[in-house]
Image (tube, rainbow, N blue to C red):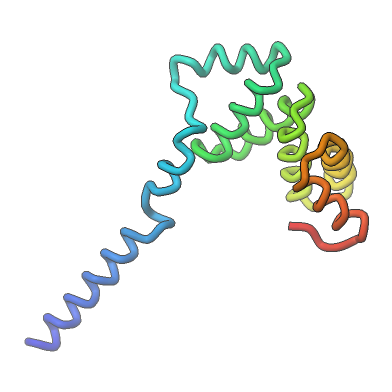
Length: 138
């Protein structure tokens, strides 16, 4: 019976550890909480972004990519942010296009990365060097 209790205790510890692992808790939500857009503001922020606000579009990109974890919405708002002239949005959109791994997306991604690099985004400058050198990119 003692071995059975030890085994049960061990299984319980493993389950508790899995439940508390970083992948299963809300620590990432606390870190990214600054990107949350309250529901009552969402409509106004979307309208501003669609009317040309680069900052509003970038807020939406961060909200959907870092908090809501909605990849389709994140891609949409990254594109709007890029089109509206936000250098960080241009980097984000280019990077997301690179993840598609097809030729057309890679060509377009390079365009956005180059544009962001020209506006001083250091991550884009480094990424562009890798792309131009033919290195594998993340």
